Amino acid sequence: QAKAALREMNGFPPIFELMRSEYAIIQNMALTSLHRATEDAENRGVMRDLEGINKCIDFIGNPEWNDLHVFAVMVIANCLEDPESVEMIKDNGGLMKLVAFITDTQPPEEEDKSKGGKDKGKASRAGKKGKDDEDKKKGGDSDVVVPSLPEVKEHAAKAIARAARNAG
Image 1 (cartoon, rainbow, N blue to C red):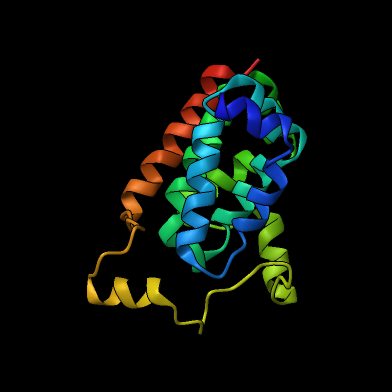
Image 2: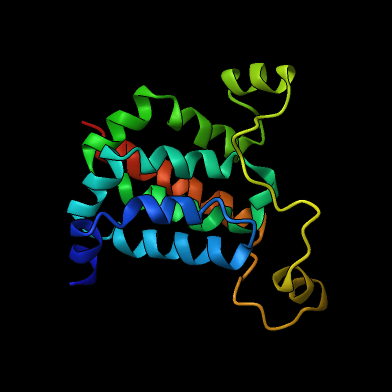
């Protein structure tokens, strides 16, 4: 019922905004909500229509948020259950961004951007010390589990495999 209510109440845009928070715990909760919501086929359609998949792909492009990349990749993987989403991600270059993410390279259009300067549209956690950062450094009780890079790449590879399986 909650998944339907999220869709009916137009709850996706506020969650997308929370993904840009300077606090890792808020980003984690937003991505966890999207992961659960995209288990529902209709919500995956909403994600596609609102370009939420692209927002998740952009999220994994920000190295400052590498501690949460796995959650964004899991949302992308859910969305790739639908052939329409697979086509969209292929057409807009998102699949190449996922491949580049796994291989630690930059897709061609990102290389061009990096030569021209920083992308001003991305929020940053750099230089902002919060409880989450202190907990991570101390090994304290933060709700954010920091996955290893191989784990993130494994999820990204599974997302690509899912895309291949569901390609039309």
